[in-house]
Length: 170
Image (cartoon, rainbow, N blue to C red; front, side, top):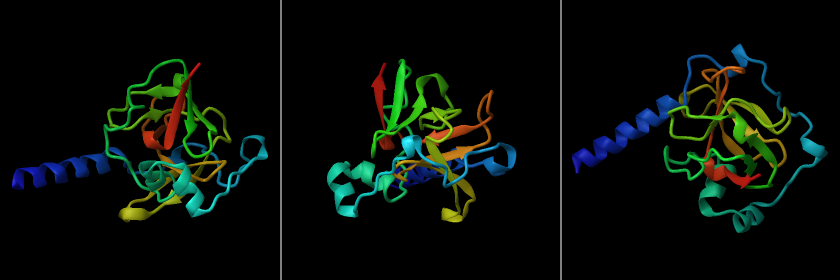
């Protein structure tokens, strides 16, 4: 029993460390500011009851309650086919398969959004950490966080919750 508890604790600590950096991504890269016009100028606003009806419980927890899926559990983690990753809440195009890379964190990672106004970045000081939260620019659904330890050409790592996205092959 102690082994199970210690293993679970170790996994939780490693997952937290994998999605942290010492400096804010905003300090080392020009990110998209909160409040930019979403694609097509559209926004999606729903009641909590409407979101609960539309989304799966896991999608609701991540997109609407700012939760995090367990590392390594997303079916989108190993998707490398030609296609587009969309917001599971509003179907806003978020990332191209061309910008996806293996970060080793256990979450789908990308080095840039499909367009500069696909996502918004906001400060997240939860859990005693300073991070940059990534939200969908259309429905404001929580997608994940962005860090400044990604590959070229941007140096950014958009560490996304796969449950917050869907994928469509081209």
